[in-house]
Image 1: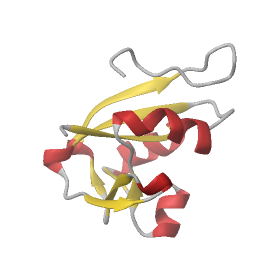
Image 2: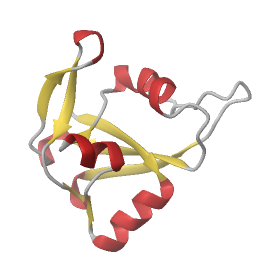
Image 3: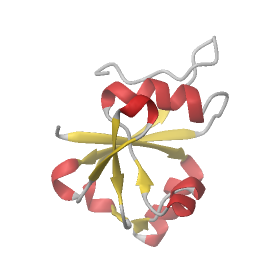
Image 4: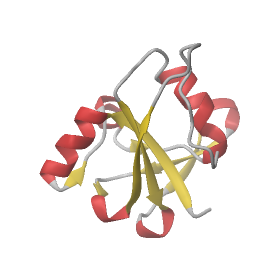
Length: 111
């Protein structure tokens, strides 16, 4: 797998850019690792954890640039986690997430 994905608030991403490193969202800090999703897990992650929220961005992370740990979570699926800060150099794309008329988030076409 070449890429994993992180959804976060645009303002949090802006703070990371200013700081030069992404340390995670509140839930990441609480859990002790940064939560990521695979492309197949992304729609469910958005529905469960980001429903109704605006001003979100989708970060595309190069898995070769970070040391991920794969751990069971929802439904026994293995989810990628990063224990430590995310270097901005591992981020390959930052895309705004728009919402459809039904309120769900639109994923980029490649998903």
